[in-house]
Amino acid sequence: GDSVTQMEGPVTLSEEAFLTINCTYTATGYPSLFWYVQYPGEGLQLLLKATKADDKGSNKGFEATYRKETTSFHLEKGSVQVSDSAVYFCALSAYNNNDMRFGAGTRLTVKP
Amino acid sequence: GAGVSQSPSNKVTEKGKDVELRCDPISGHTALYWYRQSLGQGLEFLIYFQGNSAPDKSGLPSDRFSAERTGGSVSTLTIQRTQQEDSAVYLCASSGRGGDYSNQPQHFGDGTRLSIL
Image (cartoon, chains in turn purple, green):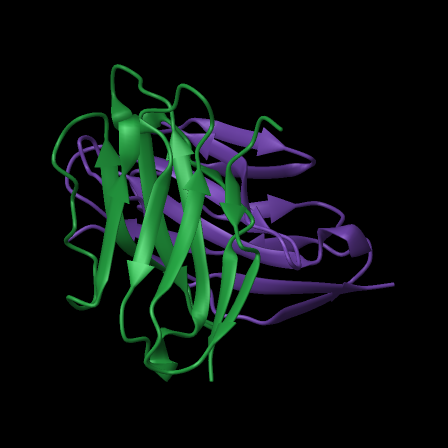
Protein backbone atom coordinates (compact mmCIF):
# COMPACT_ATOMS: atom_id res chain seq x y z
CA GLY A 1 0.00 0.00 0.00
CA ASP A 2 0.90 3.64 -0.18
CA SER A 3 3.28 4.83 2.49
CA VAL A 4 5.66 7.55 3.51
CA THR A 5 9.01 7.14 5.22
CA GLN A 6 10.71 10.12 6.75
CA MET A 7 13.94 10.65 8.54
CA GLU A 8 13.78 9.86 12.20
CA GLY A 9 14.52 12.52 14.70
CA PRO A 10 15.01 14.26 16.81
CA VAL A 11 17.05 16.80 14.90
CA THR A 12 18.84 19.54 16.80
CA LEU A 13 20.40 22.47 14.96
CA SER A 14 21.87 25.82 15.79
CA GLU A 15 20.16 28.95 14.54
CA GLU A 16 21.03 29.79 10.91
CA ALA A 17 22.05 26.21 10.13
CA PHE A 18 20.90 24.43 6.97
CA LEU A 19 18.03 21.98 7.39
CA THR A 20 17.21 18.86 5.42
CA ILE A 21 14.53 16.39 6.47
CA ASN A 22 14.36 13.41 4.16
CA CYS A 23 11.08 11.95 2.95
CA THR A 24 10.52 9.11 0.51
CA TYR A 25 7.26 7.59 -0.57
CA THR A 26 5.75 4.47 -2.08
CA ALA A 27 2.61 4.88 -4.13
CA THR A 28 0.87 3.62 -7.20
CA GLY A 29 -0.01 6.31 -9.64
CA TYR A 30 0.78 9.95 -9.07
CA PRO A 31 0.20 11.14 -5.53
CA SER A 32 0.15 14.67 -4.23
CA LEU A 33 2.80 15.33 -1.60
CA PHE A 34 2.63 17.55 1.45
CA TRP A 35 4.64 18.78 4.37
CA TYR A 36 2.76 19.64 7.54
CA VAL A 37 4.16 21.33 10.64
CA GLN A 38 2.94 20.94 14.21
CA TYR A 39 4.02 23.60 16.68
CA PRO A 40 3.91 22.72 20.39
CA GLY A 41 0.37 22.40 21.67
CA GLU A 42 -1.20 22.99 18.27
CA GLY A 43 -2.73 20.95 15.48
CA LEU A 44 -1.06 20.32 12.16
CA GLN A 45 -0.74 23.11 9.63
CA LEU A 46 -0.06 22.74 5.96
CA LEU A 47 3.44 24.02 5.24
CA LEU A 48 3.72 23.32 1.52
CA LYS A 49 2.57 20.94 -1.17
CA ALA A 50 3.37 19.69 -4.66
CA THR A 51 0.93 17.94 -6.92
CA LYS A 52 3.06 16.65 -9.77
CA ALA A 53 6.58 15.61 -10.63
CA ASP A 54 9.21 18.39 -10.60
CA ASP A 55 6.87 20.78 -8.79
CA LYS A 56 8.52 22.75 -6.01
CA GLY A 57 6.45 23.71 -2.99
CA SER A 58 7.68 26.60 -0.90
CA ASN A 59 6.54 28.57 2.11
CA LYS A 60 8.20 30.50 4.97
CA GLY A 61 11.66 29.82 3.53
CA PHE A 62 11.04 26.06 3.35
CA GLU A 63 11.19 24.22 0.03
CA ALA A 64 10.58 20.70 -1.21
CA THR A 65 10.75 19.33 -4.75
CA TYR A 66 8.66 16.41 -5.96
CA ARG A 67 11.17 13.95 -7.40
CA LYS A 68 9.46 11.08 -9.15
CA GLU A 69 12.69 9.40 -10.20
CA THR A 70 13.83 9.05 -6.60
CA THR A 71 10.30 9.01 -5.08
CA SER A 72 11.37 11.72 -2.68
CA PHE A 73 10.10 15.02 -1.29
CA HIS A 74 12.87 16.26 1.00
CA LEU A 75 12.23 19.38 3.06
CA GLU A 76 14.95 22.05 3.10
CA LYS A 77 15.55 25.44 4.61
CA GLY A 78 18.68 27.46 4.18
CA SER A 79 18.75 29.14 7.59
CA VAL A 80 16.59 27.88 10.42
CA GLN A 81 15.30 30.00 13.29
CA VAL A 82 14.37 29.14 16.84
CA SER A 83 10.73 29.65 15.86
CA ASP A 84 11.01 26.75 13.40
CA SER A 85 11.21 24.31 16.31
CA ALA A 86 8.31 21.92 15.71
CA VAL A 87 7.41 18.47 14.46
CA TYR A 88 7.38 18.10 10.68
CA PHE A 89 5.25 15.50 8.90
CA CYS A 90 5.59 14.36 5.32
CA ALA A 91 2.35 13.09 3.78
CA LEU A 92 0.92 11.83 0.53
CA SER A 93 -2.54 11.69 -0.89
CA ALA A 94 -3.06 9.39 -3.81
CA TYR A 95 -5.86 9.93 -6.23
CA ASN A 96 -9.17 8.77 -4.85
CA ASN A 97 -7.68 7.71 -1.52
CA ASN A 98 -9.81 8.44 1.48
CA ASP A 99 -6.96 8.99 3.87
CA MET A 100 -3.76 10.94 3.76
CA ARG A 101 -0.75 8.81 4.63
CA PHE A 102 1.58 10.50 7.09
CA GLY A 103 5.15 9.82 8.01
CA ALA A 104 6.08 9.33 11.64
CA GLY A 105 7.12 12.94 12.05
CA THR A 106 10.51 14.52 12.69
CA ARG A 107 11.00 16.72 15.73
CA LEU A 108 13.23 19.70 15.05
CA THR A 109 14.77 21.76 17.82
CA VAL A 110 16.65 24.92 16.91
CA LYS A 111 18.92 26.37 19.57
CA PRO A 112 19.95 30.04 19.69
CA GLY B 1 -13.35 31.44 13.84
CA ALA B 2 -12.83 30.08 10.37
CA GLY B 3 -10.77 27.02 11.34
CA VAL B 4 -11.57 23.50 12.46
CA SER B 5 -12.76 23.54 16.05
CA GLN B 6 -12.43 20.61 18.44
CA SER B 7 -13.79 20.18 21.93
CA PRO B 8 -12.90 19.57 24.62
CA SER B 9 -9.24 20.49 24.31
CA ASN B 10 -8.40 18.17 27.18
CA LYS B 11 -10.29 15.24 28.65
CA VAL B 12 -9.30 13.14 31.63
CA THR B 13 -11.47 10.17 32.49
CA GLU B 14 -11.37 6.88 34.29
CA LYS B 15 -10.81 3.57 32.58
CA GLY B 16 -14.09 2.01 31.54
CA LYS B 17 -15.96 5.27 31.01
CA ASP B 18 -17.33 6.41 27.65
CA VAL B 19 -16.10 9.64 26.05
CA GLU B 20 -17.34 11.83 23.23
CA LEU B 21 -15.10 14.12 21.23
CA ARG B 22 -16.52 16.81 18.99
CA CYS B 23 -15.32 18.32 15.75
CA ASP B 24 -16.69 21.36 13.91
CA PRO B 25 -15.21 21.43 10.41
CA ILE B 26 -14.65 24.49 8.27
CA SER B 27 -17.93 25.65 6.83
CA GLY B 28 -18.50 24.21 3.38
CA HIS B 29 -15.92 21.46 3.69
CA THR B 30 -17.43 18.17 2.64
CA ALA B 31 -14.67 15.85 3.82
CA LEU B 32 -13.95 15.20 7.49
CA TYR B 33 -11.23 13.00 8.97
CA TRP B 34 -10.36 11.72 12.42
CA TYR B 35 -6.80 10.75 13.35
CA ARG B 36 -5.11 9.56 16.50
CA GLN B 37 -1.66 10.71 17.53
CA SER B 38 -0.08 8.72 20.32
CA LEU B 39 2.87 10.11 22.25
CA GLY B 40 5.92 10.23 20.03
CA GLN B 41 4.07 8.54 17.18
CA GLY B 42 2.82 9.65 13.80
CA LEU B 43 -0.77 10.04 12.79
CA GLU B 44 -3.07 7.04 12.68
CA PHE B 45 -6.06 7.34 10.38
CA LEU B 46 -9.33 6.43 12.07
CA ILE B 47 -12.32 7.36 9.92
CA TYR B 48 -13.29 9.49 6.95
CA PHE B 49 -16.59 11.13 5.98
CA GLN B 50 -17.32 12.54 2.54
CA GLY B 51 -20.64 14.24 2.01
CA ASN B 52 -23.53 11.82 2.23
CA SER B 53 -21.48 8.77 1.31
CA ALA B 54 -20.97 5.88 3.70
CA PRO B 55 -17.97 6.65 5.91
CA ASP B 56 -14.69 4.81 5.55
CA LYS B 57 -14.27 3.18 8.95
CA SER B 58 -11.29 1.06 8.01
CA GLY B 59 -8.97 2.75 10.51
CA LEU B 60 -11.06 2.30 13.64
CA PRO B 61 -8.97 0.11 15.99
CA SER B 62 -11.86 -1.73 17.65
CA ASP B 63 -15.63 -1.81 17.92
CA ARG B 64 -15.37 0.41 20.98
CA PHE B 65 -14.74 3.29 18.56
CA SER B 66 -17.50 4.87 16.52
CA ALA B 67 -18.16 8.18 14.85
CA GLU B 68 -21.03 9.98 13.30
CA ARG B 69 -21.47 13.15 11.33
CA THR B 70 -24.79 14.91 11.59
CA GLY B 71 -26.14 17.02 8.76
CA GLY B 72 -22.87 16.76 6.91
CA SER B 73 -21.20 19.10 9.36
CA VAL B 74 -20.38 18.43 13.02
CA SER B 75 -18.83 15.07 13.87
CA THR B 76 -18.62 13.17 17.15
CA LEU B 77 -16.08 10.45 17.87
CA THR B 78 -17.21 8.14 20.66
CA ILE B 79 -14.99 5.74 22.56
CA GLN B 80 -16.81 3.26 24.76
CA ARG B 81 -15.34 1.48 27.77
CA THR B 82 -12.10 3.42 27.48
CA GLN B 83 -8.77 1.70 28.04
CA GLN B 84 -5.44 3.21 29.03
CA GLU B 85 -4.05 2.57 25.55
CA ASP B 86 -6.71 4.94 24.20
CA SER B 87 -4.76 7.84 25.72
CA ALA B 88 -3.65 10.02 22.83
CA VAL B 89 -4.35 13.26 21.01
CA TYR B 90 -7.34 12.92 18.70
CA LEU B 91 -7.13 15.21 15.69
CA CYS B 92 -9.90 16.18 13.33
CA ALA B 93 -9.34 17.59 9.86
CA SER B 94 -11.55 18.79 7.06
CA SER B 95 -10.97 19.51 3.42
CA GLY B 96 -12.83 21.06 0.55
CA ARG B 97 -14.07 19.29 -2.49
CA GLY B 98 -12.09 19.57 -5.67
CA GLY B 99 -12.17 17.79 -8.95
CA ASP B 100 -9.53 15.49 -7.53
CA TYR B 101 -9.84 15.00 -3.77
CA SER B 102 -6.19 14.19 -3.46
CA ASN B 103 -5.12 17.77 -4.21
CA GLN B 104 -7.05 19.31 -1.36
CA PRO B 105 -4.95 19.85 1.77
CA GLN B 106 -6.48 18.97 5.08
CA HIS B 107 -7.07 21.65 7.68
CA PHE B 108 -6.55 20.40 11.21
CA GLY B 109 -8.04 21.35 14.54
CA ASP B 110 -5.85 21.69 17.62
CA GLY B 111 -6.92 18.26 18.83
CA THR B 112 -8.36 16.76 22.00
CA ARG B 113 -5.83 15.38 24.44
CA LEU B 114 -7.43 12.32 26.02
CA SER B 115 -5.97 10.83 29.18
CA ILE B 116 -7.33 7.60 30.61
CA LEU B 117 -6.48 7.02 34.25
